[in-house]
Length: 200
Length: 362
Image (cartoon, each protein chain N blue to C red):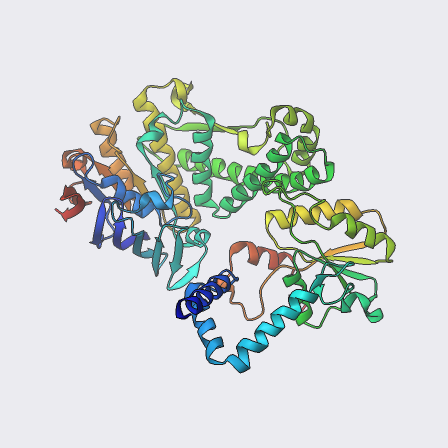
C-alpha cells in the first residue's frame, strides 16, 4: 500500500513537472505542499481540475478558452466596437485583458506560420479570421503578434489576406518598456523606439 | 583601448583550468602542435557573439572525458570601462552575463569587437564564395554589430521560403510575406556590406603600409540590391526557385572579389604568400578603420599568423600591430617567429602535461 501511494505521488510529480515554469524539484515541492494542505489545496484543486477538464473549450468565434461555446468577450455587445485584436495564443489574449484597456474583440490564431514546423495558414485560424473581418463590420484590425520572423511573416500574410476590405490595419508599437533602462535595451529596440517617437 | 585584462577558463577544450592576466601588449602564444594555443585563441573569440572562430557547437567545446560543460570569465577593458564577461554552457545553448546581468549574445558586439585570421582562411581567395562571404560579414559586424541580426533574420526567412519551394507549396501570400522580410533584411545586409567595403578601401589607401592594397568589390547575383528591387526579384524568381528547390539569388549568394592592386591581379591567382598578405592587409585596414569609428582597434586573433609570411613581412606586421595599439593574440610553434617584437609583446609558452594544457609566461 505504501509503495502504491508512493508511485501515485511520483506520477503526480512527473505530470506537474511537465507544466511550463515547473521542474522536477519545484513540482515535488508543490505536490508536497498540496498533500500537507489537503483540505485547502489538494481537494479543491482536484475538483477544480475535473471541472475545467469537463467544461473548458475553445470559443467558436475567437479561439479564446472558456467554459462556454462562445466566450464572455464575444458575447458582450459592448465589445462589438469594430476593433479586433489578433494574437498568437490564448495567453497573449489573457495578457491583453489584464490591462483592461482594450475594449474590442479578439482573434486567437493558435500559433504562427512556420514552413519548417509544418504550420500553414489552414493549421491556424486565418481563414476564420478573414471570414470574421468580412462578416462582423470590423473597422480596425490590431496585429499584436510577436516581433519574431515567424510572427512578422504571419502579420504580413494576414495583411495580404484582408487588405482592400476597407479595414484599418495597425500593429502594436515597439519600443522602450515601462520601467526599462535604455542602457540595457538592445540596439534594435532602441532603434524601433526612436523611429516611433512621439511629441512629449 | 580594447583589451582582455584577465582570462579564466574552466574545462574549455584542452584546458582544465587557466588563469592569466594579460597586459595591454600583444600576446604571443607559442608551443608545440596540439599544445592548446588555438584553444586559447578560441576562448577569446567566444567574447564575441556567435560560435567563435572554429564555429564549434557548444557541446564540442567542453573538455572530455569530463563533459561537464565549460565556462569563461573575462575582464574586458573597453573604451575606458571595465566589463566582467562570463559565458558558459552546460551542454545546451551558451549563456552570456555582462557585469553580472544575463544578456543576449549580441550584446557582446557592443562592447567587444574581435576579428580573427585562422589557417583555414589562407585558402580564402581560392575556395568557395561562402567562406569569403562569411569573412566579409565578420568584418562588417565589427563595424555594425546589428549586421548579425540582419543576417540571422534573412537566413531564417530564407529557410522558411526554401521549405515552401521544396514542398512546392502554392500560396503566393505566404511567399510574399517571407519575401518582404527577406528583402528588408537583405537590403540592410547589402548596405552594411557596402559600408564595410568602403571603410576598408579608405583605410587601406589612407595610410602607409607594408602590406599590399586589395581592391575590393562585392559581386551580386542580380541587379536587385534595394529592398523594393529584392522583393520584386524574389517574386519574379519563384518559379525558377521552385524548380531548384531553393532561393538562387540574393545577398546569400554574393561574393567578395579582391584584386592585388599593384599587380592588377585577381587574389585567387596570386601566390600563397601574396594571398596571405592581402588577408593581413584587410585585417589591419579593418583595425585602423575601427580605431576611428569605434574609438579603439579591435582585438585581433591571429592563429599561426607567421605561416606564409617571410621575416620582413612578419616584422612589418608586428610593427603595424604595435603602432595601432591593438591587443593582438597570436600563435606560432616557436618564439623565434616573434623575435622582431622584442619586449613589445607578452610571450606565453603553451604546453601539454597529463592530458591538460598549461601556460607559462616567459
